[in-house]
Length: 378
Image (cartoon, rainbow, N blue to C red; front, side, top):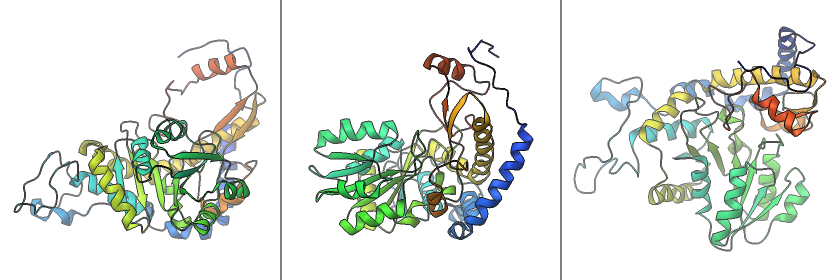
């Protein structure tokens, strides 16, 4: 364990952890009461996470295994020329299909395509567009998404306007006749800003019913937020984070809501471009989803306790976490979220160098860039 002088007092909190546990339970009771109606569409989600995407009956001939086997074969025998459930693993295989079905069910969606990374999923979505099409994106996006839009999508003649979607008038003004896609991230990375998904989707579809409204749901997971239920057309995930939850898979997903033609386009690009995950990674991710409900409840509890502790410390200037009473957008929480993950943004009262020293000496810190996994953050 490392011990260094950080240049400011140690983080000795004035209140004991068990006292914050009591505060947490009180907060959760109040949040639960206010979100009773919002919880209804999520009935059965624990069962979907545990059993979704696979039925032992699928494999009757080999004794109905309760865990789907890994299908590693790159090619499949055809019943007759051109007749087969699967032909080549890039176009589809049993392991990937089980995962895609489970994620689609968790998001209350119609179809799902999984990819070798979250950015590969975004890139596939962008390939649906044409040169001279226009995108309106939230101005507080994950850096990789913003980089893709600015440096790669622009090379295809696709322009992007970044706007603060918390201001619906600004969003409305950003729409153009050639706007084809709207990209939302809520909560945002890293500033935890929320976007009213249903309001933005309604404005976009009133302007042009064919606009594709996409929500990056990575920071919430399907367990706490279902954007398709609030008017979005597509949900984007970096499955690497909360959905897989074990820091051993890099993967992305796109889930569509009753958009059969759009799904066909995404499925074709998935096959033609080939940015697909391996069957082994699909197995790992599906296994991760089996514990999603348990993990997310723990993230919510632990993250909120840590956020409340930090909010009380004199060296902390500001804490951003949707579970705190001080969080500014509680009306949106009640409208579209049934809980919150363990992501916390903290402003410290110290210099840049002191901040680096503090991060380096976190007792539970891993000194790495990823989030939302085990091992990982709250």
